[in-house]
Length: 228
Ligand code: MN
Image (cartoon, rainbow, N blue to C red; front, side, top):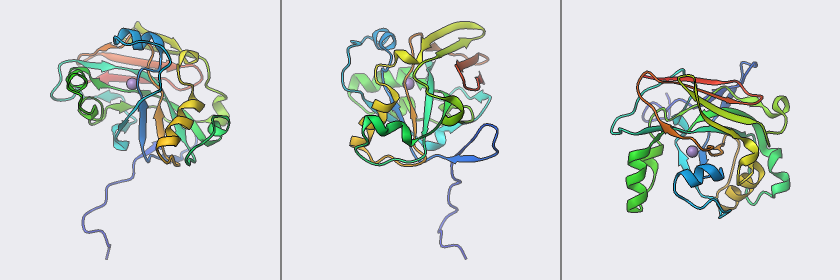
């Protein structure tokens, strides 16, 4: 007989492109305002202040072609992001060793109930209600780092119904991937299975049911999602 007193939840996993293998997800960290032009469009100073992070739930990551328009919002935004998946972790990881902990990369959307996030910001409340809802992070299968090479630069784009809406370059990140890993590891113990969403370039905007989003990052599979 199982020692579980209720049925345990299924582990959250992401497929690895071309391998049939599965990457188990432990935690999801997301950085805010990591591209200067996006910080400006959200009404903030783009100077390099210390980064800040929020979390989504592991099971918010879903490999899917459909994003269900969430309840309780009338202003749901797309944010195209590069996802970094860790194969190991620790605390106080030096910047120079941070990339040794990366398993691979994926393309993700940090879908956001912007109206609820806006209320939370204004009232000094946590962001989960705007960020960490069901299926809020569509993502592609992961590609191992040995197959992608460094992801320091390369285009990151989002089209909405075929129109270009976000058009950035990974080299525009204010906090680079090794710096993000190092910084996070000073505050949290990072571990295998952690996923970091690395922020979005300028051009975020609202979606409606029926809209089709396509996110592309150089060297990775494209993420194609329809709002239903
Ligand atoms: Mn984001």
